[in-house]
Length: 475
Ligand code: NAD
Image (cartoon, rainbow, N blue to C red; front, side):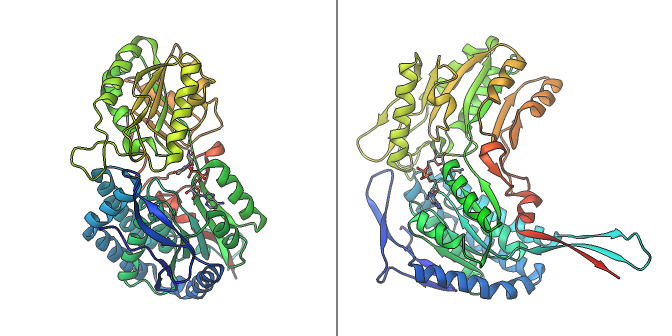
């Protein structure tokens, strides 16, 4: 049932023969699912040469024809959704329903870029002198090196692949070694849709070895990374040494502000469901909950009730609403957050411990009475732990929400139009959901500010990220 894991270089699928590699583990059982080959240095050089050779051809292919191949890949992904979602749940842990939704959304993203690639318009600027025509055009940047993490095995790679290919770039992607099947299946769809050899290459390996080989290469002109802030800073520095364009989609610590004029129970239902999606291992997951005093106890009661009603289990089992954490590192991290909170007077309203004796399960957890300088209120949890604290005034909550170095996502609930506008403006964040958690769609920009990174994926910004602006003055 699980995918056969291979590298894809210059249009050829390569297996483990003679290569180093690693086992991929099912986080629900701890059992080995398959063996993943690592690309050797020679493989990486071959991928670089292939992407470089394919670039002029792919750039010269019309956006209309590129779009046809992309749309075919999207159709294949939809046809294969059950199989891809099953493999993804086995390696990552999320429930099958979430996995299937991720795969279908990935197909939508490809379709959207297939169309948007045809609209990379330039403009004509009136000249200062008679007989001068001033053209502003957009050109693909060239070969892209992309790096993706383990929490969305299909969705995160697809944003980079579809944006780059639609723009006319070629690509080498290093997907997560812990959850490789989602990206292997995705790349298969592009290959089977007729993508020319070398346009898209998939490699795996020791992450630092691969990035430190690819990023400094003269062939690579653009870097795109999704992952943690420390790794993002390291890769951004490597890119800067070659003055290369980079998109950095890093971690966050998303504040949620619930004002007195919102219905606290309705807000709790909406945001708790969003919080425990993918066991909280989502960069835009709501992670710090500030509730104005009047609605505080009702919000906490309803949120806690939701957390206690979650059915933990293998993502492939019917009825499971939350799967395991993706790896044992997250389990250790959750214990450390909970222990620190308890030591500082935090009260555990739900969960707080590991669950079962196989796999990497952690209970949906709610903590109250934690100080603002506790670990859970200052470090990205990336797991199913929700701290809820009260606040008094607008200015106070804005100051607390903006006090961290992160700025990826934020959420607010209010019934006042004026307050909705004021909080949307006041929060320092790349994305703000006011009475809405719909902040990630194919057609809207997705990205952070402050230490959460720079650049956007999604929307027209996600296409422009793979293009250079050129000015031509023509006499
Ligand atoms: P980590 O920092 O070791 O790795 C994060 C990701 O970066 C992984 O996918 C890893 O394979 C990759 N990576 C690590 N070193 C790399 C390198 N030198 N070159 C290229 N890629 C490299 O942490 P982790 O234990 O995997 O995850 C923990 C933290 O990472 C989380 O708490 C969260 O903050 C962050 N994270 C963020 C996202 C996101 O969507 N923004 C996704 C996964 C993890």
